Image 1: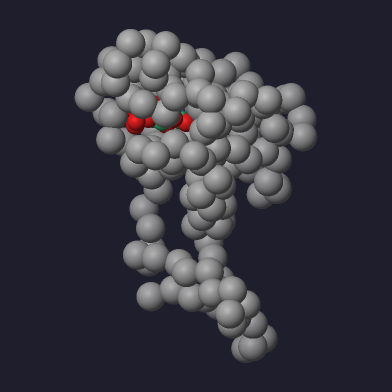
Image 2: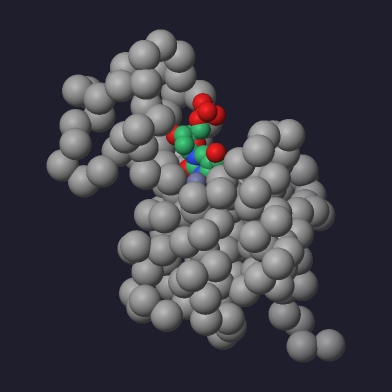
Amino acid sequence: MSGKREDVLGWDEYFMSLALLSAGRSKDPNTQVGACVADPHNRIVGIGYNGFPRGCSDDRLPWAREGAYLDTKYPFVCHAEVNAILNAITRDLTGCRMYVALFPCNECTKIIIQSGIGEIIYLSDKYAATDSVRASKIMLDSSGTAYRQFVPSRPSLTIDFFTCRLHHD
Ligand SMILES: O=c1[nH]c(=O)n([C@H]2C[C@H](O)[C@@H](COP(=O)(O)O)O2)cc1CO
Ligand SMILES: [Zn+2]
């Protein structure tokens, strides 16, 4: 009996929570995505969320989903996964894991594979029926890149700034 605290966050829970916290920075009114890259020593090496490119004002570009292509967010927004990789402290992410709130699209998947990331842990797969996500899975399977859904062990975590503590159910 060492008396240590046992009810600590697991590694998956920790990194997925960081990804979700990062998503809290996204200005996208419909889908906020966060991504966090962890290395084999469980060090955070990169983190990001979906947003417009650096220097592009969030007030000048559109956040719409529908309409003429140039009137929507789609040609402009940088996906969370790409931002996490570009923000990483090293270019070679061999053996790293990516925690991401939403299953990566095909364009992000190419970049994830090329960066050396060996495993994706995702939360939502709400676009599973799209050709983009189907293409992602084809590339992941043929490259031998692992992916699995995060299974939470508790329903929620709450940051309580008043008590300076993290609460959970
Ligand atoms: O893997 C992803 N990563 C990511 O950051 N995104 C971003 C792009 C958009 O800002 C938003 C998706 O918007 P919507 O669900 O309204 O189509 O999420 C979207 C995906 C999957 O499409
Ligand atoms: Zn993407």
